[in-house]
Length: 145
Image (cartoon, rainbow, N blue to C red; front, top):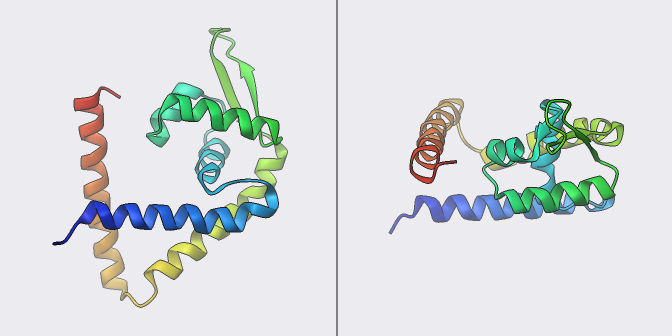
């Protein structure tokens, strides 16, 4: 029987493994790439905002941000509006790594989609966007994210 989510989980786990292998020389694991992508594109997010944007548990965000900070990829600063809130910024080290991360993601996507026609790629992207939006809507409405 076809299991859409099972296939998505396999792709997700393989992606983390592929990223982990590519990032090993930088002392990073595969799951940290998404934090660096987001922070390089939206510097100054709070940890709560980062959790919401990535659809990740807040405790996982706290652990990963702490690790990335220890490794010199991010820094935290108190919010000027609320000193209790820590805003997270990429360091120069993270910004310098961004082109590598982008190339890594582009190459992996090309590898996964190899053999599909342009029409199939466009249809897949449209269908995945619809499904992704449905998942986000459910989480926001039913889980209260």
